[in-house]
Image 1 (cartoon, rainbow, N blue to C red):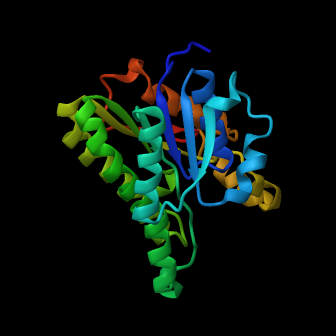
Image 2 (cartoon, helix red, strand yellow):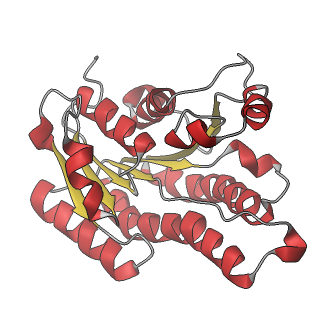
Length: 245
């Protein structure tokens, strides 16, 4: 790898899953110190086992409830105390609870908004003042091709569209401080749930990829690493599609 993120400190909130692992590996391969904050502490050993980075000691897994402002603030304070700065923030928490709108409960709506939007808001709100003070930083958010709309996903599509609006607005606020804010919009990405997906639905999603294939977590991580690098210093407020139109 190029080492283009050498000596940067990156925080990946909600990074305990398969995409978070790919991001941590890519950042680590590029020279970063990586803090993975995730609510599920039981993932720690599996996540750290065999992590493909030159120095596993530079990747740490910290239990954090990303829905809790207190938890997020405590995690960020600990990172700043240990490492002195945060150069890159990737809020990755998300999730869906599908239902047709007329059958959707308040809980399904609120839960999806909280998972996808509130967690992004809380993470950015606490890190942004630090980046303003330093006069530099990279924030990379995660949307989804679902922002264009899916049957049974009014809540999720709305939340992911909200991430794109969040990106555009925050980018305008932060440009004067030389902090870039972008988002990655993944399409159909390989994950453990594919094994249980009916083939016809799998093919429908593959058709949304211009290359007619399934994207990988590494594809998403590569895009995020680029947006977090100095190579993307003049790119902000953008939504970069990966494995989708």
